[in-house]
Image (cartoon, rainbow over the protein chains, first blue to last red):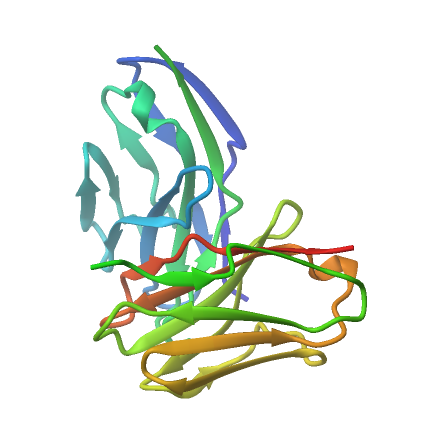
Length: 113
Length: 112
């Protein structure tokens, strides 16, 4: 079945550091890929999506590029802030399985001021 | 826009009791989804409705769990004979076109 792998369980950075969170997927065809962010006590919030190979999604300074060759959708931000501390989830919607989201295990980002 | 509303925010039940969780989607959204979140399993899809019709319940445990959407303004998730392993945060999401899902704050269910 479809799956999403996030290799980093936790990432600790200082403000203004560069962020990379790795996401790889396994699915047939061209799934839609997503990043969601979750703050304590809240549900996940949609960050952005990409639906085609080489398409870049972006929001709030975060970005990721759909790469079918490496089946990846890595999240990057040039300069993180303390307010970016949260859990980040990579997810996919399979091209032939309706609209249900399949999530990765999440990456907890902690940014020290 | 109040966002997706879930009630109650917290529910504690004894083993064997029934729990009903409520979700009010964003007005005008045609799709409603239910997910479950635990430390061990992470975020798992349970079921979803489009225009009130059940579309996919592939994530629902076959016994004890049921979901309904009697009208466009609310959906319920019912768990009969709750067990400790049902303890989780149950999340409802709604969507206008399917892709961008807006999540509610969740209901934290604790089964003693």
